Image 1 (tube, rainbow, N blue to C red):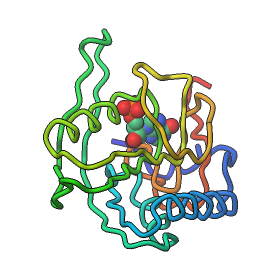
Image 2: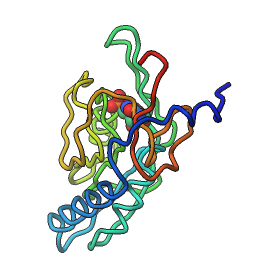
Image 3: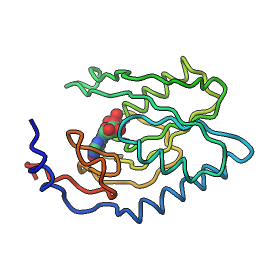
Length: 184
Ligand code: IMP
């Protein structure tokens, strides 16, 4: 069982401050609004890490917006071909013929996003699918992924805060920080 008291002592240095996150989210929302003028978008947030990002992003859009949540998780096996993605919660909304933006907290190996896009293209038939990720960790990529809107490129460190967790804690933090693992 994790010891939260001990875990909170392992919060490392801030990688992205609350102020920088706020500014970046506004910038991304402005770009999305401009590119979808006279239209509407459906934001699809992959739980749980992107719940804060999607909320802030949606509140800054100046176009009509619908929001839905899915939960797809990737499990990386010992070999790349063993990697699997499991659907824990599917869409509630119909996105057939709609302009969809997948909202992710962080793209790491790319497996989750790659799977979601292929699943939507095959079974949900949206008009367009774009990807908006707050963080991109390109050093760990296993499969190529299309990314249309990116907040920040981050190094290969384990990050917490602003939705990102370790053992389900730290999502409430307003900044993004490093988590000090024992090995480091
Ligand atoms: P992937 O791109 O399929 O490897 O999976 C991305 C998911 O892994 C994200 O949505 C996060 O939930 C999780 N993840 C990846 N890197 C981190 C991190 O540094 N901190 C917290 N969660 C992470």
